Length: 67
Image 1 (tube, rainbow, N blue to C red):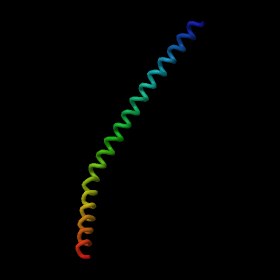
Image 2 (image 1 turned 120 degrees about the horizontal axis):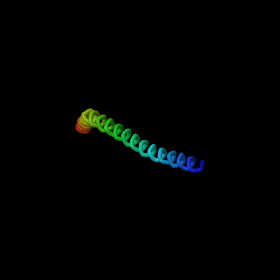
Image 3 (image 1 turned 180 degrees about the vertical axis):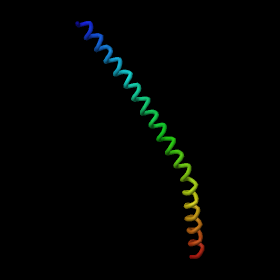
Image 4 (image 1 turned 45 degrees about the horizontal axis):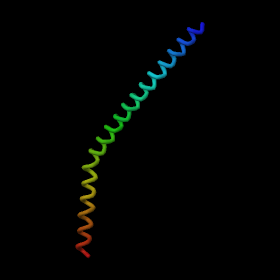
C-alpha cells in the first residue's frame, strides 16, 4: 500500500518536471515567432519611415532657405 503511494507520488513528480520543460519550450517558440514577426514588420516599415523622414528633411531645408 505505501509502496504504491510512493510510486504514484514519484510518477506525479516526474510528470510535473516534464511539463515544466514542455512549457519552457512552448514559451521559447512563441517568443521566437513574435521576434520574427516584429523584425519583419520593422523591416517592411523601415523603408516607409525612411521615406517620411526624407520628405520632412527636404521640407525643413526648403523652409530654412526661404527665410
